[in-house]
Image 1 (cartoon, rainbow, N blue to C red):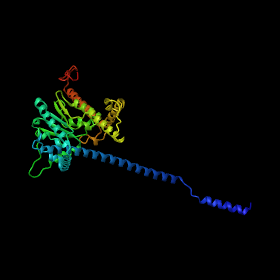
Image 2 (tube, helix red, strand yellow):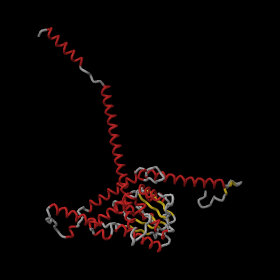
Image 3 (cartoon, one colour):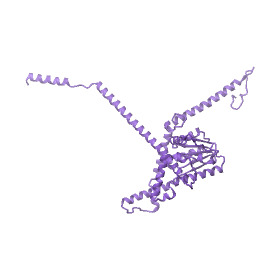
Image 4 (cartoon, rainbow, N blue to C red):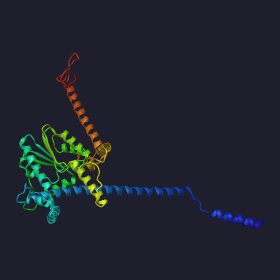
Length: 397
């Protein structure tokens, strides 16, 4: 109630209020800009990290494919050293390399020490017998049909039939595999010293086509490499199909059917789906029995034991999704999936460019044809036209 005291309080309140900081529009804009820039760099870092991680995983996967192909040829090299070898493959050890040879020999020693039944028939016997069977089938096919002039090996890896089989002397062999595998194989074949030369194939030519067999582009790349679909061909698919999804296998056979002339032949190795599922069911049954300490939990008949637990509708839907995924990949994939393609466009743009170029060439040829016919026209005294191309097929008439 005292006036002096009230004035002091009012003055103090006014001074405190005037000293409080005020937030302007410029500060808000600056803070928002800094947050946006920080968010942009953070997002760019995350995306680049994901790209590097995906690229690294792809490189590791492709290197694993190359390493697997070297291990396969290492078993052929071990078979080549035997006195009773089923075939002769002098390039096998060179293509396998010391690391793959060491892995195969160590596994052979371990199996021999363990007394396993596999060691009695030799480790990798399945690969060796499969190679021998494919060799004999190829030679038999070439002897039966001398019109086969093209041999296509899908998933060739370190295949050496072009250097081993004299029956392929009059053919052109196309080897298709991942770019890393093709480059590694060419590098190993060209490694020579001052006293040796690179091996010479026994066929007319060897054309190696780096491609991705999961996509549809491999058929186009094969034709760009010189494959002629009008000629009879021999298709060899050894140790490949069971590494591909089912939708890719179906599409692979569709492309082979489109590229094969009447009379063409094909041989492929596959794993029975029923046997794989039976083994999976047996393993799961063993795990369940071990979980209950040896007590049997199997019920029902033996026919129900191997029944597919996945409904057919779910399996069809999964196959449809997988087909759509690879179709989308073929449509919009970057040039990274097609390293040997002559075009830098994605497949959908490449198709548009090719179609436009082909139509432009046809229109240009037609225009030149019409221009030539017009130049040959002659105008008579009565105004009539005459010329060799007036009534000719495709002429102006």
